[in-house]
Amino acid sequence: MRQQLKVIQYGLGPIGAAAARLIVERPDLALVGGVDVDPAKVGFDVGTIIGLDHPLGIKVVERLAQVEAEADVVLHTTSSYFDLFKTQLIEILEAGLDVVSTSEELSFPWLAHPEDAAEIDAVAQLTGQTVLGTGVNPGFLMDALPLFLTAISQRVDRIAMTRVVNASLRRGPFQAKIGAGMTVDDFNTKMAAGRMGHVGLPESVGMVFATLGHTLVKYETDVKPIVAEELVKTAYFEVQPGQVRGLKQVARGYTESGEFMTLTFIAALDEPNEGDTVRLYGRPDLEVKLQGTNGDIATVAIAVNALRRVHEAAPGLVTMRDIPMVTV
Ligand SMILES: NC(=O)c1ccc[n+]([C@@H]2O[C@H](COP(=O)([O-])OP(=O)(O)OC[C@H]3O[C@@H](n4cnc5c(N)ncnc54)[C@H](OP(=O)(O)O)[C@@H]3O)[C@@H](O)[C@H]2O)c1
Image 1 (cartoon, rainbow, N blue to C red):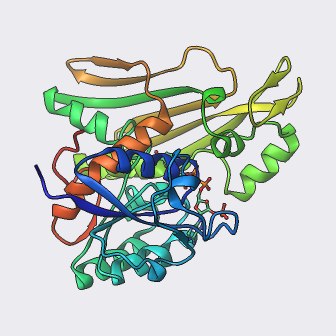
Image 2: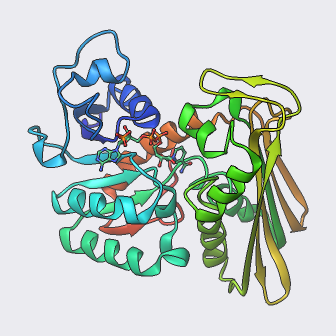
């Protein structure tokens, strides 16, 4: 059997807890630490916090430096935004650990955050560690998957990808970030201020353009609320008619010849017709449909599956286009 990789789970929200459970399940991985700042979690047994029916004999600590066990790699799941997670990544790299993170802005930071990306890359090179941002989206559905599909095309003129998510089946923080239960005015104000909605569309466009060697001459994005026509209830929200039950976000990337990439992200409570469709137009026209991509299960899977690839990769900031194919 392969040598066990020793993993610290950094961030124990719904995604981090599910990742930790999967790490415990995998014979080739060992969970050796749990980090989270939430006072409701610090000091408690990691097993209890992640929902196991038995303790693991490891306490949740507030800072990485407080983890006593030796480790190989960190699975980082605290935040989507560079200004919040950058110092955490530097702390992990400087502790001599590789890191896989679900932070959306890390999935391909070279377009939207080039200076931050260069800084992280420099620290990773200096410390001899590897850092990857991944997840279902960004990290797979709207970037790595369409790029992989171009391998069987002779020519690609345009790429379109649509993801429809029934958010009623997703975790609370996800329902919150798509605006569930807000008034339309609140939604528009909060969206204009940032820190809401799906994060990752510029990252996906950036990865595809850079990998195919296209120059992005224009990037457009648009977001609209989807309003409830009747009462919608989930485990986390009760949405009255007239309130927001989700959103539709569209991003368009243009080359000098026109619109090359169109990404449509629809996520709402009780949204019908869940599914993912990738279309490549060219020679040939190709359509690939996926049913059953539960974003939370998929994100945890791809992040955990990437741990060994990242541990074995050359030092630096890498993205899903840079490492060998991630598999179960
Ligand atoms: N790429 C993708 O496809 C994808 C898919 C799913 C999720 N994600 C991202 O993955 C991340 C995790 O998701 P989630 O739903 O589990 O988020 P969450 O509910 O916000 O959980 C994050 C956890 O990390 C803790 N935390 C925050 N700052 C910390 C710090 N400095 N040190 C240690 N712990 C810290 C939080 O504590 P407090 O609650 O006290 O702040 C919370 O317990 C989010 O950024 C999410 O957007 C990405």
